[in-house]
Length: 253
Image (tube, rainbow, N blue to C red):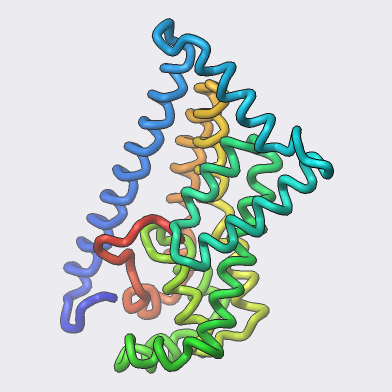
C-alpha cells in the first residue's frame, strides 16, 4: 500500500519505479524462454526437441482413455489445487502453454486460475475469515471501503498488478465480502493479459518456436499498456491506496 504522508510526486515516482522493475523482470523471463527455444534448435541440443514433443504428447493424454479431454480436466484440477496452495499462477500458465499450446493452453490456464481464485475467495469468506482479519487487522477497513466504492474496478486493477499474490488477493476479497459477480468479472478480465503472455512463453519454449516467445514479449507490452489504461480510468485516490506488489512475493496476479 502507498505509505501515508507521501506527496503526489513521491507516489508517482514510486509507481514508475515499480512499473519499470516489473517490466524488467518479465523481460528477463521472456529472454530466458527465448534462450531455451533457440537452444532446442542448436546442434548441442541433440534429440532434446523430439523427446520434449514425445513428453508433450503423453501429457496431452496419449495414454489416457479420455485423451486430451481427460488430460485437460486433470490439469485443471491439479493447477487449481496448486494455485489454492499459493503457487504463482503465472507459472501454471507457462506449464499450460508448454503442454497444450497457445489456444487450448489459454483456455485451461484461465479456467484453472478462476477455479483456484474463486475457491480461495470462498475460504476467505468462511473458514479463513478469522485468520485474514487477524493478519490484516487495521487494513481491512480501508480495503473494504475501496470495495464498496467500486468492487469491479478494484479487483480488475489488483489482478493487473503482476507481482501481487493471487491467493492473498482472493482471501482479502472474500473476507471483505466482495460480491461474487464483480469479483469473477474483474478477475477474469484481469487474468487475461498475463495469461496470454506466459502461455505464449511456455508454448514457444516447449515447441522451439521463437516467434511465439517474441509474440509473448509483444503481448507483455500490451499487458502493461492495459494496466496503465486501467489506472488512467481507475479513481486516482483508490489506485494510490490499493495494494501494490509485495516485496519478495512470487508472480501471481
